[in-house]
Amino acid sequence: AQSVTQPDIHITVSEGASLELRCNYSYGATPYLFWYVQSPGQGLQLLLKYFSGDTLVQGIKGFEAEFKRSQSSFNLRKPSVHWSDAAEYFCAVGTSGTYKYIFGTGTRLKVLA
Amino acid sequence: GAGVSQTPSNKVTEKGKYVELRCDPISGHTALYWYRQSLGQGPEFLIYFQGTGAADDSGLPNDRFFAVRPEGSVSTLKIQRTERGDSAVYLCASSLTSNTEAFFGQGTRLTVV
Image 1 (cartoon, rainbow over the protein chains, first blue to last red):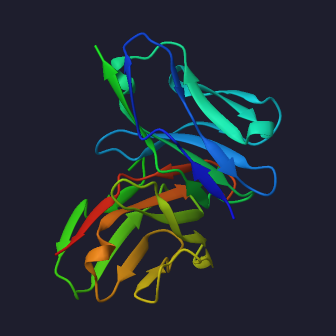
Image 2 (cartoon, helix red, strand yellow):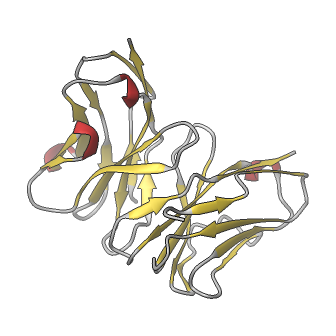
Image 3 (tube, rainbow over the protein chains, first blue to last red):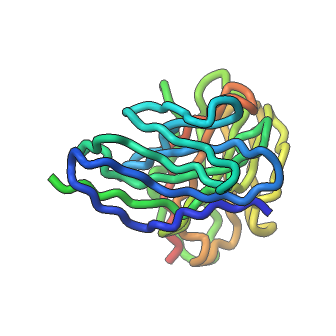
């Protein structure tokens, strides 16, 4: 069965520091992988997605993620965090052809000034 | 409007009552999804519409939950005999086709007291 694990429930970083949010998935075939961000009172916004090809994916707001098949991981990174990045981040795995996703439980990011 | 619109934004109902949650997708989007997000969890898939028909309703938890999309645009999620465990944020998303990016609404927060 498909599943997504985000092992860090909360992460706190200082503004300007680098960030890595972890995501591990379980899926029998090549997965479609996504990272979404959810700010308070806002809907989910797509940061980036991986379908195939280059395993390093660039997204919006300066985020990137790397697909590592051998580790079943799709970690999200940002070299320098801004205070406005404070939000909850969700990793998701999907099947081809639809946006029927399995989401992780999320990682809440706090940014210290 | 430009985005996915969900109404109401908040709904408080008594246990045992019937509720309807509405989703207005982005104009022209043929695919529509409902998800449920419980406190501290990631969104969970409920149902997917392609046009007017429910292409996949495997995520509906039981027969108290039902959704319709009679004209292939607006969708209504209906919950009968609500239970306290139904309290959650109900998210709607739409996409141009089934394999293009899905855009999420801000959700309806349902509280069953």
